Image (tube, rainbow, N blue to C red; front, side, top):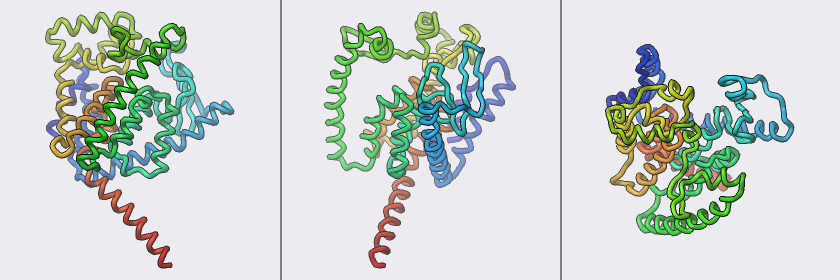
Length: 357
């Protein structure tokens, strides 16, 4: 596993500076190598600690979020990111960041964007549902809703519905898949008609109708509004794909967007432009190899689709927090079932003890 992780360094490599490349090898790749060399029970323990820390930050942040919105409490201090007037001003509270620049009234916890909250929560629910208590589950749902993340709102119901797929019997699984196909088709048709109704609205059309690609009045794709905001990027990227030269395979280099456009954004197309398609296919194969295809084919298929959706709008699956959640959630499922069994057993023994008393 450690050997297979080493090529991921290309996602970090900086052609302009060996020193920066070495630093990114240390901060980006060595945590993955360390995780790969740990024992299974140690990996599982780290994943549990990370999830508990994440939920703790949500618990602390939610009351602060409501205090800011209701009473407009002052921050401890503020941080300017980027140029004044063009960048974002973050207000720093206790375990909580807040900004009104483009993400008004959205819950972001300690992260710089509410989209991070809306992306991590579906992963936790999908891979670790059995390990969560009812309280933790409710906290995650509330946090995801308050983030107003489109990714969370779209993925939440499917993720919740298929999170226990590995525990179902064959007939139950087939029924769930059949029902979900019918439900998705019905939801798609209903959503298309609802989205069409916003076409002529000056406000809703920008937030709903123009967020999707249309053909013959039917939705055929999602507009990645992260990179389409950059003037000239669309035509330049299409030319990059059509040329099919060496750059297509290895990319135009780290921070190419920053050099050419003076800024960058999180987008799978920016990742392909800077790093090339070889590392993209390698990441697909790497994460695909984590999946238990023979034993849980349907679950693995749904999982891979979920990861592709994550990468589409936040191409950072190779960073330690995403990698940890996905790898442990896929490879160490038996630890989750054993942990859940112990919890149920302990509760049963406590109930029996109280009854005898």
